[in-house]
Structures are given as C-alpha cells and as structure tokens.
Image (cartoon, rainbow, N blue to C red; front, side, top):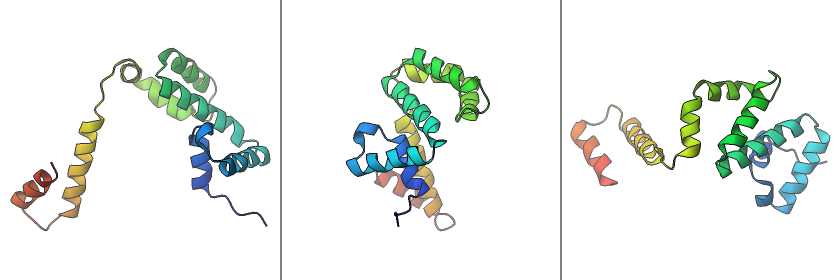
Length: 134
C-alpha cells in the first residue's frame, strides 16, 4: 500500500520551484500529476506565477493575469480578479524596489505581544516588552 499524500505535502510540491525539490519529492509530484490530471493545470499556473513574480517581470505578469481572467474556470480566476482591482499597487510592487515588509513584521510582532498580554498588564509593561526586543 502506498503512503498517503497529504494536502500540505501536495501544496508544498506545487508551490516549490521544481529544481528545489528532492528526488523523492519530484517523483511523488510526477506520480500525483499522472494520477490526478486535474492537478496539472494548477501546477503549471502556479509555477508560471512564481517565475513571473520571482523575476519581477510586470509584462509577463499582465499576460498571466489576462490568461487567468479569460475564463472563470481558470484555477486562479478569483485571485486574478482581486489583483486586477488594485493593479496600480501590483504594478508598483513589481517595478519599485521599495517594500513595507519590515513595517509589516514589526506590526505583527506588536500584535503578538499585545495578544499574549491581553488583560494582564498596563501600558507601562507593554511598552517595556515592545522596547525590550528592539
């Protein structure tokens, strides 16, 4: 009997660049793509999306986006609609070197600390915990 493949494993294989998978993972991915033909279009769309984003190629991204929006049965149709609704921000993310990733990380850290301390302490202790990590 073959070992069961979890959704988490399959998701990891689909979203990982093929060259980064181990030989066993590549073999398992190929078996899944053969056994479940409906997974192949999803895999191909995801790999193309990853490549476009990794290379920051805005023109290819627009081609990918049009392809997803061309048919409501495309795997990422809903996601593509959301991206299209704020295309200016997406364009800036592709073309500009700026990122708010550091800020988002600090906000996430602050929210985590606040959640841990909920109802236990006042503003003084919260301030000390926030500044302690800096």
